[in-house]
Length: 253
Length: 218
Ligand SMILES: Nc1ncnc2c1ncn2[C@@H]1O[C@H](COP(=O)(O)OP(=O)(O)OP(=O)(O)O)[C@@H](O)[C@H]1O
Ligand SMILES: [Mg+2]
Image (cartoon, rainbow over all chains, first blue to last red; front, side):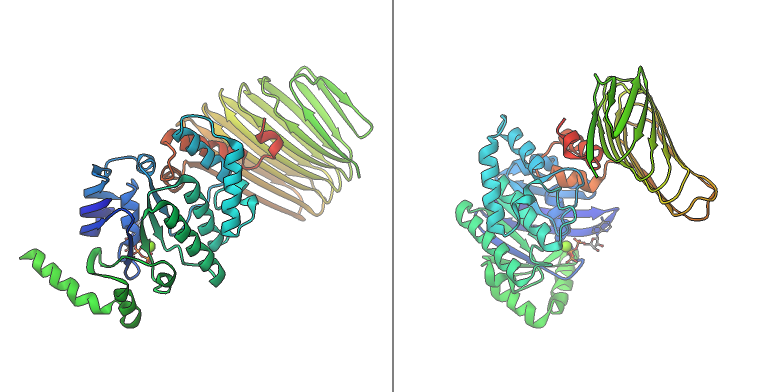
């Protein structure tokens, strides 16, 4: 279970997230929506304690505070972040990265044969060439390929809590099907918790969420289920503007 | 045209064939390139290297060099005649204070040269990379792509110099000295690598990015 308690996040003294509370139980799928610049990606970075962001409040994972851990310690607790814009890293291959992490985690050299077999079958399921195994991390890949490449990491690392920041952006129709069915398959096998950040309600036709939250100006202004997403699709985020003002008034009283 | 793979390693003292001719005396080497040649050089126990490469007409050379140990002084002169192609991929982790002096001398026409340099300085490094194109030469291109990665708070200085006396030249240089990229570091750490491991991998990536597998796997 992941819990954000009174989370505040600043970047260069500018307040981005204000007193945010969110609880995601084991095996639940939550969706976070909200207009551009609302602070959705900032939350995902804050959960991973990106040093660029100043964080206060509490982030609790399985009854343990993780807000003062290093990003790698957080990852090794079983959290995984699929970035909105996956970073390209020259000179380091997927295989090298994953081998290093896994052998470190298991405190022994990994079985290369099994490792390669698993990588190959994941590539097949993701409909990417097995050459991706030895490609440099996201380097020169198309937008959609990068998302798939990150999913390759996800499958190899087997996380328990997954943040998907706009996994659907830049995917063509076929890729969207491949990617979502890969996520659904992972969910079926491992029952992780998932936090999905998206703008497209269409994604929720493929992945069924338990809860939908709306973030605006760094605060959650509405909670609901898939029907809330449908409502946003029809009416936009504007409807929540007044709700936001009301909650701010309440806070100042 | 026949392709020759020459590997200069620590034990090599001299090597001859019909296509190329290497003289490697003590610490000075002259290589005459005829035909299409690759050199993979991971000679690591030399502290001084002084190399002259003569590219004969219509020849090409890809020279990959990697060093991570004792090198303190590296002098390379390239003499290009006509219709040649030269590529240098030079990666070095300086464990000792290091001087690099590369002099690319273009004497004729239709020559293309690319010099790529990747330096990590565990000690101070001073590199001069100069290209000289003589008067009345035609259709030569030069690319210098020179990068230093600053991890150990040592001084890395890279000086590209272009001395061009001809009007018919395309010369570009690109020079950066940077620190470890914070976004890359965070990205690797958020997958589970410790800071030390991530920095190690980033250094390796930086240094090997320009090298072929034969050198990477060494
Ligand atoms: N590194 C940064 N430096 C300065 N400002 C930043 C930085 N990162 C985010 N911000 C600002 O924080 C606010 C929230 O950004 P964030 O990326 O979290 O939005 P988002 O909800 O993910 O938007 P989008 O839907 O466009 O991805 C924006 O105003 C953005 O400009
Ligand atoms: Mg975002």
